[in-house]
Image 1 (spheres, rainbow, N blue to C red):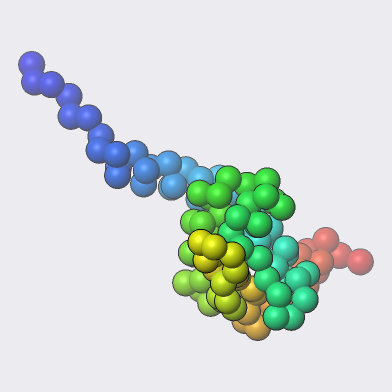
Image 2 (image 1 turned 90 degrees about the vertical axis):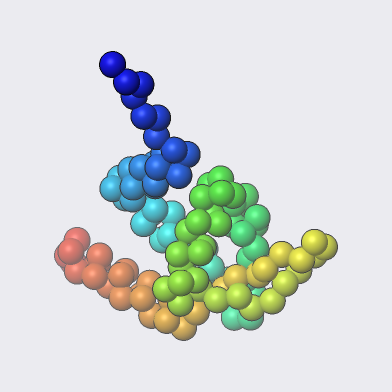
Length: 112
């Protein structure tokens, strides 16, 4: 009888990410990030490290969710701060509009 093939680390990572997405955790984390950035003043933002501390979400998860939000143009880099330089992120106009639309849709589901 032959040896069973062991999954590669990439296969394990993909399976773990698929589990997180199915559970809805990534969407909840994305919403938390958008809400946090929405309440920053125009021209101000937060670094990934600041978001991780404020939201009590691991930095590795924050980085993944921020990459997804950047790809969707819902957040945007607005500068850097500190040494080593850390990217400062802010919600984009598209992100603000999307978040407001989500809030309205959720309010309609709940009703008056």
